[in-house]
Length: 637
Image (cartoon, rainbow, N blue to C red):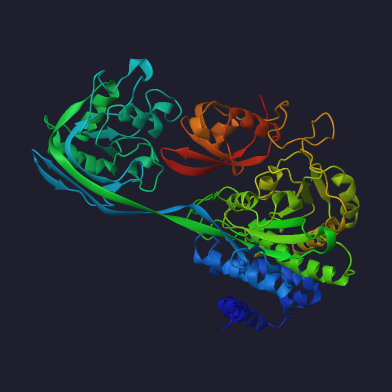
């Protein structure tokens, strides 16, 4: 059986599902079949656009999360239609002479926890704790086996408010296991004593484990304190970011912590009583007895894959490229980036099955156009790139530009589609006409004739998609997205019934004409910055935009971390954009609109691109866990 036959068989469950649905609909014929009649009347391009989106966003695709079977099915589907269009595999191995449709790249690692145990032998008896119910071995530190005496260190805070200290000046925990409470000193209601709004910076894992690391513990038992007014106090963490090197860290529930205190506290105090002592200041308690605990962490690299198909050019332009891209991945069951939380299918019909549909349709239409043109006409090659792992940080496009299958300087133009299925009367937003000298004047006649309301965006607002990776390399870009940014974005409601098929096809046809004309132009567009406030139209290297007056108010003070690790939030202003979006002191801003955030100057540059009402997706790290927050920008007061 050849690969095409295999892929056709792999699509059979989808096609059967659609066929059964169609058969069931056909039964209701008393008043005619409206769907059948409508589908017969609409142009074939709209039916094709509909079919691609319906299949890619079906439950069988599972939300197209990288690393899942559903994403593999989606890649096979795109490859099938690339083959049908007559494209060639976009990857070429010069050593073996083999071509491939897939460009693989490492995407983090999968973490497996094993061999976990925690047993306390106290003066009041032995306690064997149950994994998952009582404790978890975490990724906050290293792995290994620990055994030794325990010291209760309260909240593990140095230099807290009102001269608060958890440790004595000469505290040395070498060879001992630190038993530490989560959060910070709290009042009788379980809220912070130091901050009217949630917790202060001193409650963060970075701060608490930093204070602990200076005392050289052999291991750590982190306990959710009883009585804390925080929903996280009932949760056990496991797969978290490391905050302390070479020290195993175990996490306990409040009830398990009570059992630990009952077995080991020399004065028979409860964990709640110990917490209240720690609320007041230094409370180091040498527990009686010992603990034996173990845990192993095994990390194996995981991989994602871009799907690349090329339409070869010819003549003197064949070694130059137009890259047409759109991301294929989405959010799966909402495990990452959901606005509603996990547990439900996120189909991603608009985001970005619609963009993937455009890739497949353009592969076919541009192939036909190339075949119809005179054989001696010079044409640029066109690379069709279905990028992977865009949602988690433009990973696929970033890998592509850093490891291109051709010289990156040979890219004349990058066209990117993201969410073109919901183009309504508000129009199609196009960003990037100012990233190449003369591009606006060149593109305007095509915009005028396309039958859509075109909303041109200056600068790089909307940079949170794959064209941003190419822009940073000094390549002119055109980015298409619906101008009316809908509320179904990153929710289970992004379904195919919400798609505007006619406008979507008009968008595809518009970019067919733009791509075809760009492929024939004798000269490339000289790169411009996309900075509408520059003093001239001359090109310069890409980078943060020139500072300008801010039209929005974020409402944080931050400090830049070493090694480009992000920005730590020092303070959040009440009722600001950050406050309403859920940013907290101690959060580390790691990505802004899916791009790494490394400096305060870069943050100001990003803010300068925004207007009140714009929404930004921000990746923050809080207590060792990464989470997505969405910020809807407010105007300055």
